[in-house]
Image (cartoon, rainbow, N blue to C red; front, side):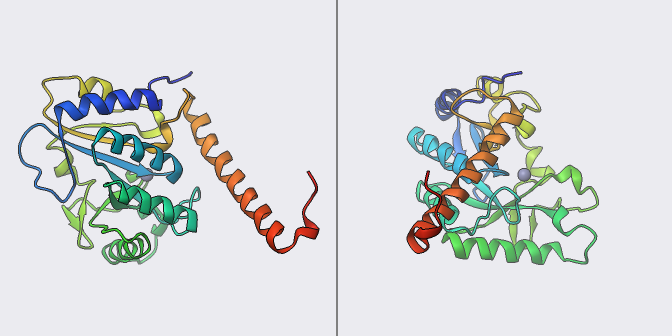
Length: 244
Ligand SMILES: [Zn+2]
């Protein structure tokens, strides 16, 4: 089934409505008062999609926070091109956070507090941005890990249940709306404190099913790796390049 409301065109409309109703806040801001929105993006698959949304938000005059995974099978945050993307997102006025994958260390004796602090420091060093907050990747697959406090490893916990409970919360996890849709809550005058979690890879130029949106990220990465390899060979070993 196609899901037409996850298009860039729809996202522009959502932003325009939200911008008029809410003041956009960051996770380390004072979060008291009404008419405020937290606008969080967890980058699970595609920094390229994240940059596309970051540009739309900058055009609308709003700022969001982008949470970056270390150890994703879909992207490497320290790849030259991806570092450049993360720096560009920060330069647009958005904030960078750590998207923490506790499952990667399941069963080990790792100290999550130290790991969160170390990953955030590395991400900050490479992107040149402050990384003062984190969110948890796939919390349901690591039920034994309890990271529910307002801060861990010195970082603000954007996934803290007590924080979420202070807001109306919506999420587009797995390419579907959970807890209601963003359209509904952005247009609902009764809602004065909004926490929106979206994943940039779900938002594309054309309507696609969730699995096709993920495949789009995989294909895009494969094409970029192939182009990178071909470019390297053309520069250094042109005699071995296939003639197309
Ligand atoms: Zn995630």
